[in-house]
Image (cartoon, rainbow, N blue to C red; front, top):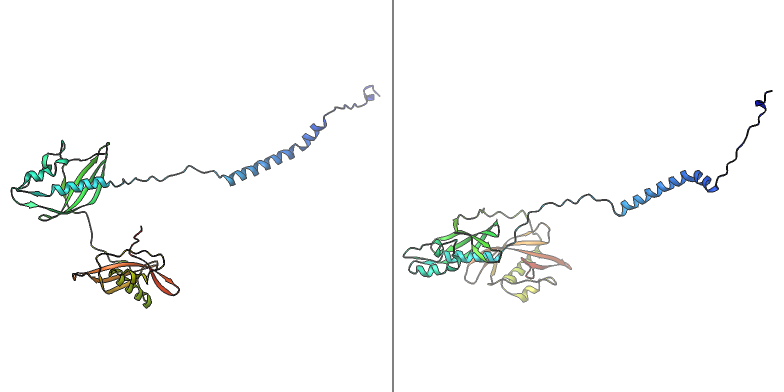
Amino acid sequence: MSAASGRHPTVSITSRALWRIRLVRELPRYLLAAVAIAGLAASARFAIAPPRGPRIVAARADTPSRDPGAEGFATLFARRYLSWNGADPEGSASGLERFTGAGIESGGGIAPPESGSERVEWAEVVQERDQGAGQRAFTVAVQTDNAGLLYLVVAVTRTPGGELQLSGYPAFVGAPSAGSARPAPHLVEVQDGALATVVERSLRNYLGDLPQELAADLAHGARVSLPAPALSLESIQRLDWTADRSSVVAVVRTADSRGVRYTLAYELEVVRVQGRWEVSAVEMDPSA
C-alpha cells in the first residue's frame, strides 16, 4: 500500500449568512411576483387612462359671417344709382356724392337722359359673394317703375378702420338661378274627423283674429301670434300628417276684406290631451 493511498479526504466548511441563502432560494419567486404586479399595474393604467392616438380634426371652411351694414350700404347705393330725373341731373348726382371718390367718378358713372325719370320701388340683397380682403360683392334686386326688375352687383369693401366704401363701378347681371316650385313630399291624409274639426275651427279663429275663441282649442302653454290683416277661411282643400305625425299641414283657401283670395298652407302642431285634440303651435313660434 502506497503512502498516497493512505490519505483521507478533506471536507472544507464555509460559513454564509442566512439571509443570503434565503435570498438565493426565494429569488425566483420574488421575480415572478414582481412581474405579476407590474402586469396588474399596466392593466389598471390602460383601464383608467387608455392611450389615445393623435386627434384628427376635420378641416372646415369657415363661412364668412353676414355684414348687415355692408348689405345696407350696397342697397342704398343701388336705390340712389337707379333713381334719377332727367330734368334735374344735379339732384340725381347729389344723391351719389357720398359714394364717389378716387375709385368712381362723380355721379357714380351714370348719365341720365335730358328727359324722363326713374324711381326705385324696392331694393333687396339676394346674393352675396366674399371676394377676400374685406371685400364683398352683393347682388341687389331692384324693382323700378320704368325698367322693371333689375339685378345690380355692388362691390363693397370694409376698411381696417371699419369704413364702408365702393370697390368700383357696379354691374348689371341676370337673375340668380331659380327653378319652378316643387310639389310637397308625399304626406298621409288625415282621416280623423275630430282632428279635422279642431284644425278647421282653430284656423278660422286664427285667421279671423279671434283670440278668445282660438284659446279654447290651444294646448296649455301654447303661444300663438295672430296674423294681420284678418282673413276669412273659405275652405280646407287638404289636411295631411307630417312624417313624424306630430303636426298636420292644412292647405286652405282664404279671402281678405277686399275680396282678394289666397291659397295658403299652414302647419299646426297638435297633441291629444285626455282624448281631445289640441293645437300647441300654428306655423311659427312667436317667442323664437
